Length: 432
Ligand code: LFR
Image 1 (cartoon, rainbow, N blue to C red):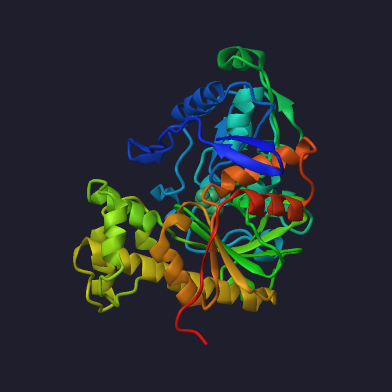
Image 2: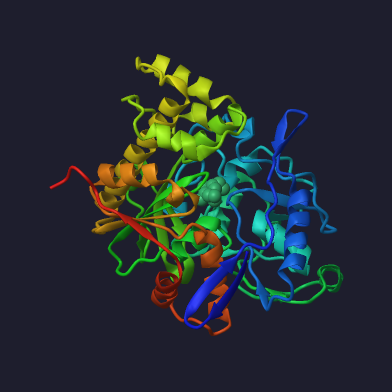
């Protein structure tokens, strides 16, 4: 995406899109990281001379470099089964404030042989290293590893010793901009600098939430749905741990207090199993598809890739419910289950943080899904403001714009989003 700030607005243009297709190799699910890097180079070339570049991606996953700075093997996908054996956390919640997800970086690292590894780079830091030659770690993404001390705002060095993880692996947390390597500049046809943005896509998306006051919840709705509130400080209570809420770092010292809900992944995998039919007609049918069936989107059976319609049917058999019949009912069942999961997460976030909420901002690809937005408004009993769609890209660009003096603090960035991006409000029905 290329972005421009002109006339008091920020405009995004899609310049290049490439697929991110994981590959199973000898039983392990990998990211095709070189294909992704090629996509980045093609995109930069197509974007023409850009004053600055920022990188964000999904969190948690990483590549390992050897002492010569070469990548050791292909990064493993967090949906790989290698972390199935982790059923309880290894990092103390009162230190990391992180939700337990079996695939958190810390767990993944504990499955690896690390003797050849000199450096661990999270995915955006790895791409940044290839573009610039500079090694560093970006805070918002570091906060998703289970190896970050959320109070000291530093790597949790003590924890490394307890877990036998070598200190050398973890690069300094830095926020410096770095110029492109000369050979990369030559390849894409211009030189520019990589600006450190919120490299965790969810953190970038939260920057671009067009909230007017602090009394909002957000749902960053894509493959995952990240549901929570923005706070000035982490919540590290026992209740919060039991509710599996996470305290991930946002920009400017904010805390993204949220829960991971499995999200549109379940729908995406159904569409894949059905041979990628058009979603729009299915959503139209799902409007009136009568089914009361509700699944728990966070059931572990929905985590790995596979035949999702069959897994939904198996879940229903296990929970004594009638399985949804036909595609429209399956879609309806997924969306109403997500809306209920959002309702629970918003209510828990409010209860556990004490932060009152008047509106739910639903950003990301899911904001185009009118049925989901409507069901969410009805379930939460709150107005749902849907959009922007490309929230992560916008948040990324906004932080770059700020580094260039084009916009000020978070409130100003959000003003800019409100002036620029289209949003649609869904009022709840059936509430007094
Ligand atoms: C969303 C996201 C979530 C993270 C998951 C795995 O794209 O980054 O925030 O928990 O992907 O990295």
